[in-house]
Length: 271
Image (cartoon, rainbow, N blue to C red):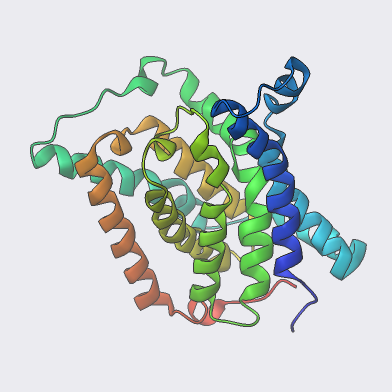
């Protein structure tokens, strides 16, 4: 059953809220605006990262009311994943680790594993990333709202591609700000291709866990954490191999689960 929604309204809220903070940050970084210290202090809080979550909640409230918001938030605590728990934990570290391993076998130098210099920080980083590093702020929007409502009108694969493109384009202002993440030190097409391919994998996880936003958040967490721990993106060869592995993973998902639902016959709409 189709539910009331508006992807454009969501996008205007999500992008508008985030870019309200990120565009000034980019202007400051590019030397275009000499902002007062009070403004810089607010921007340092990284409030812009919460745009997709706010967009999902507000758009749901507008079109589905309080009951819709309650259902949306409920999917964020659907923690009984069964075998899919292991998929969310392993799929990205396996793919990213394999890419770096293959590149090393082909003769590329092995980048330093800086994250492993403080092994005690590894489990702490998982919690930090989950709550403050993107998954909580973003997955209610990209998978929980955009994918969920678009798949009522188009195929799940097409909906996942649209959500992935929106996910990537949302980061655009950050390419004009000095950042430590490897994504922003490369052309934006690399991030867009990554968010589309990784977004399809996250959509596959989401749809096979009956719309569990928690599963999507966990998968997103492992995606970010694995890219931090395993320095595949610091090797051009490994990065190219990783694109190939993502592509092969997506082809396998489409072959096994179908482009229409990405979940075979078990697809369901929690709305």
